[in-house]
Amino acid sequence: MGYTKIIKEDMDDKLKSEKGWFCTRSGNEYIYDFHLSKLPIIIKVASSVIIDTDRKRNRGSDAIRIYAVRKEALGKKAKIVAGLVKASRVYRMGDWRKNLEEKVHSTILRSKIVYSKWQVKNSRQTNF
Image (tube, rainbow, N blue to C red; front, side, top):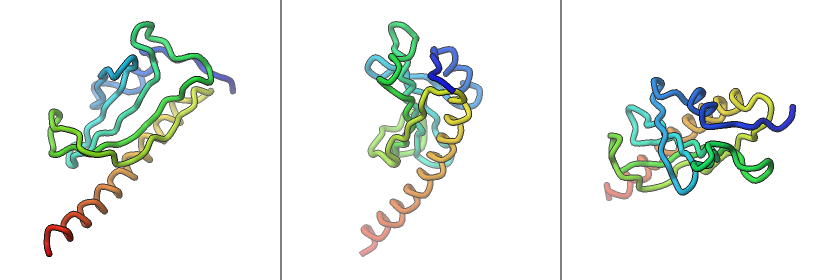
């Protein structure tokens, strides 16, 4: 399986708005956000699709990255306050869609665990 060129429409097709994903911009790249409904967590997918061209960066120069951040509260407009899960990469090879889906699910699970541990630690610090 070789390198696969990916355009914005490919990402839109995989990370569908009707499933809760929405596309934002950061720098010169499209970022896809998914807000967990019951926790103040956003799963972010940095597409590496360049905004000006709607095409991926050149082969070997970037991969799709998935990470999680914590918000100050529930709600789409709540401020991001901390990172939860460092970025993992999805290489643009062959079955990138399946690999992306697996990494997103893994990031959701890891972010829930990290957030739960943060809550326990935070509650201990406030309850002397």
